[in-house]
Length: 355
Image (cartoon, rainbow, N blue to C red; front, side, top):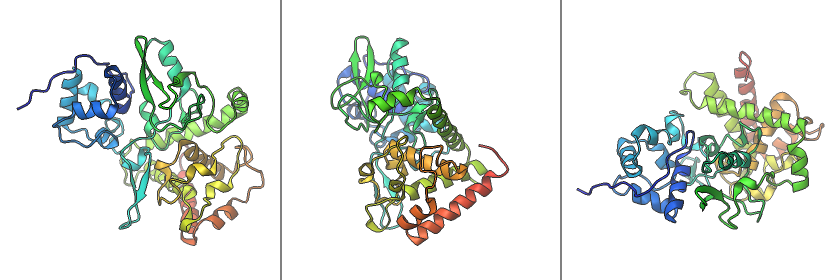
């Protein structure tokens, strides 16, 4: 029987850190990729390749082997897995870099690689506080597009080279480890812009109290969705409401019958901009929300919030937006009926409670 030996050096996990972030930071020490390190650490454990499936696999064999490799207690490793904090999590609740439709049942099969966003202000505070950058658990969720701490949008694009980033890479900076752009190597903590917004407009938005209030409203909804994922599905209202919101987002991001236009593309907005070309890889999916870029997911949530609260003008849309007209023209009749019914069900469930 092969003896499992600890790694010669390793970084300790940070409270609230995601498993992928922990592996990436330690991989930077050895100058290898996260995939290579996890394969080495879990060699013989019989678990899936590096990705969400590993994060959801909290088997005793995986946890024990990782604890031995990194010289940690099993509870420290367990805390890195999202399922230890959200026990009723499903695959669609996490982001994905891509997906394909299952022809047998019409469902979307998501890739095993997460698509991370990040808050540059959080990363800046990490290094200012004398610690490594780390990716938070919440940043891997499809329903999260905002930083709940700072109330600002998460980023997914390097403002130095304008490359869209699916998974940030780690690099050693002195005695600390920083997340950097895989294309140009620029640290992500100094990039305080907003994706798909010109820098001069982004600076104004970051200082605008009205925009900040809108962002905080999105944070409220995303916090509600995260809390709902901690509740077992059944007759509980919160999980039902969260599922309906996700269903609405999927319908807004889906292009019917091979059409190049999705409902979300009909809602121009200078505050919550999401270029339509961003959705080409995912618009054909029956459930594109988890695989969509974070600026698309954010815009979909904003359209839903504006619809529920009748606040299209407040969120930067035209005050006379023909919401039903846009959705009816870009959805199949079946999807439009489903969309209307979902809005009705969501309103009915929300009547006795407050978000």
